[in-house]
Structures are given as structure tokens and as C-alpha cells.
Length: 181
Image (cartoon, rainbow, N blue to C red; front, side, top):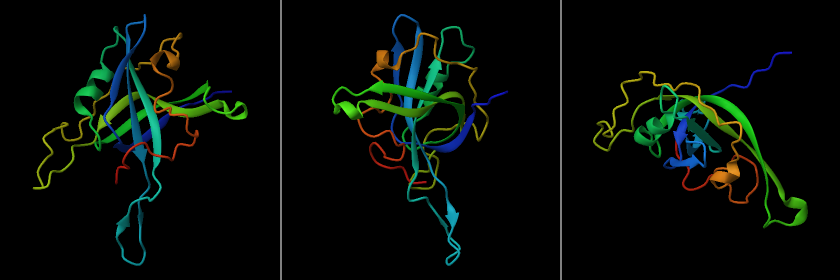
């Protein structure tokens, strides 16, 4: 039986990306949080309304020294809090033990996205209506080569699962200010 693990999302960064490295491998990683919501049209007013409960998703992108494109550098250089992005990747389950929790609540898990491709959807508008100072090429597609964590990758080597604060494993609680759509 064939399987498929592919995720395609459009949303916004909720905070600045954070770069790190996996010890002894030469592989760089960037972690960021992504907000995705659903807009719907209000039948009474005819206006589009933002989702009051957006989904917050932790994401990781990897860059190996032998990769054709450096996805980590692209994200660190061009992506900032509030920027709209299109990402493609795959779901991965992180599991860990929270030693600070009571015994029966120690086992934790959450899904995250390992980003394989990215497209910059455009910069934010400044107050005077002009571009926010960052040009992304008017919708041109910027993608990375397939980069994935090495076989011996352990998220605990890089401070545990991204965004892990010992809270619940549901993805709808935001860390920091929610980003409006």
C-alpha cells in the first residue's frame, strides 16, 4: 500500500525564525511558528471575516552542507514576523517526557512540519500604502532542494521540540501575540 505525507499551507509567521545547528553533523536548522486560519464571508454584511481561532503550527527547515539551496539562509534573511508564506513539507511526530509534570502526564507529543519548500507571498504594507521595504520578487517561486534531518537527528540535542514549554500538545494555543490574517 502506498502512503503520502505532504502538507501545503498558506499563513503567516508568528515570530522571528530562530537558527541553530545539530551538533557534530554540520546540519543547520531554523525553527519558526506558523499561523493558519480560514476566512469566511459574512452573509449579512458581505465582508470577509478572519478566523477567530487560527491554528498555530511549529515548523523546522534543515540545510545540509551539500544542498543546492540553503533553505535556512533564505528563511533567516527574508522571513520576519507577520510575513505571509506558502510552505510545503511533511508532518512529523515529536515525543518526549516532561520531567516537571506529574507522573501520569509526563509523556508528551505534538505534530510539527518539516519544511521542504517555501514561497514568499509578498511583504507587508507600510502605513503609507507602500511596500514594507522587503521585495520578494512579486510572487516568484523560491524553493529549496529537499532537505531533511539526518537519520541521527534528535530534537533534544537542539533544546527539545520547538516551542516546547511543557504545555499541552494541542496546536491552537499561540505563543506570543496572535497574527491577524
